[in-house]
Length: 482
Image 1 (tube, rainbow, N blue to C red):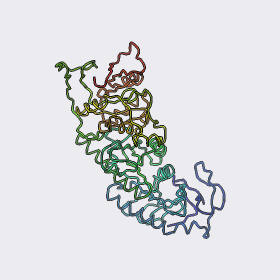
Image 2 (tube, rainbow, N blue to C red):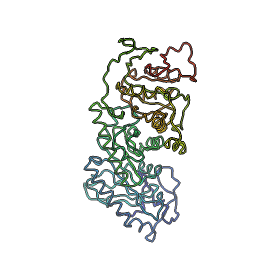
Image 3 (cartoon, rainbow, N blue to C red):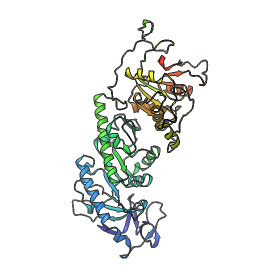
Image 4 (cartoon, rainbow, N blue to C red):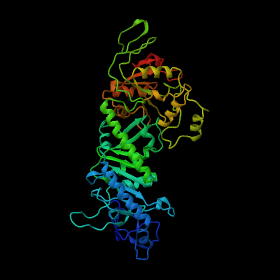
């Protein structure tokens, strides 16, 4: 392992005599000679500089050994075959703030089942390579830090991660291909969800999917946007490529990586078996059936919404716009997803039953009826998914989440944006828009959804805005009539 005077930034750009590392004493020199815009100053080190001794501490050596062992282990799982994938871990040191700790990263373009501790790179907290491996004899290539480094550094910076694993596991690749336009992976009611930080068995796990690029470093911008948009996620999928997973420690990252891969694999197998990963019971996808109107002996198929009788649903999936439909509230009832966290006082009030979710009295009956008929129900709201789950788990009718197959909020898009409904169709696996019925009280949302091809019913509730006389939409005064 060389302690180098000529260092490189993790982006691959060379920096002459540059050691921008806040932990150590700095000696100012000339400007950095990187090819990119850089305000770093150069730092000239000599044998007395503490950087040399700090790069060879037992903690650094132990971290190198750990990264080497993990690379060998995950190779046996198929996550880093063909020299792909990578692992990085912070060098834990109680005497150093987390944001200033050294970082160990695996090399690029090497067989991960053959890597040794001496093959590892050591970086400063801001991505400057402080130590790189010695060059090995032919046929080994000159050492190169992983191309994942810029993305790893973003996970460290934005999520205060202690370790990051980049996997090329086949299950992580295939799960992004089942619905090629979907921007999210979702699954619920699987035991292994409990292994993902901040999630329980009843929760819906949502992982953002970003599009692949020709070069790994080009993913950095979309990766950054994804973790900004999904503050709860500890993983980002890359379509046709793999997944990045991080945790507070290497143990957390490894545990979650194993759980994520299990859930990806389970989702693929459920899809092959025709089981619905979005539903609480993972029932088989319903085949097209004919429901019958049971009132007055009617056995006619009906494609319009009637009054005073139960109308057949040709659609087998319903998207329920909560505001003004499931609840009597015409506006968002809880903090929106633009808030980074839900009001803790409000959340506590729901969880301690000081507050209950107020919704129409027909909700338990109609949700139970739809569920028994094999109809999938999804919620769409201006409020966050967490807020929706809070409302439905603490309703005055009890916990109604067992009837809900999925939750959508404005991270998917606004209710008057066509792309929102296209995204929902892709996410729930519906190929024909007319097979999804939107029930809403919002005229503009109804017009947008119908333009995309969805079937639409507008519900007439007291307090909702009146409809224009020539609206030409199917309407109903009660969900029980659907």
